[in-house]
Length: 158
Image (cartoon, rainbow, N blue to C red; front, side):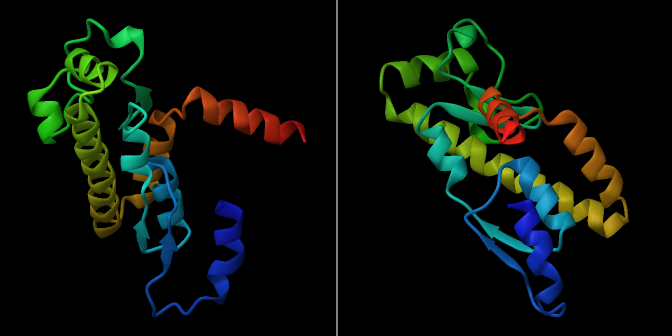
């Protein structure tokens, strides 16, 4: 995906918005901005929420996992979304595991806010001239899920 953007971006008019449809984890959004993309839309925040996955500034986590059974922290420390202010990981895990739709809704709320916050911070870094530093720090702190790491390893073996 990033290589395709790198190869096509030079051919796009520099005075027009550049739109990437249906792309991006939080880390990919930052990398896409670095490659000249201006706008995004993506179902990923709500799609993965339906499977019990939440995005955080450090990567994604599966709230349905047993590790969160007694975890009374918010989904993401410091997040200002409704879900993080009012629900714990343990309670959301319970909701997801009993099939209560509120769990899915709250993960969707959180994931959507998380994506918006990443873009707000990206925009602020661009305006202050600190985007390169922001990008480096974001990439250093964002750890992809195990699935992503396995897929990258498999791709590297080809």
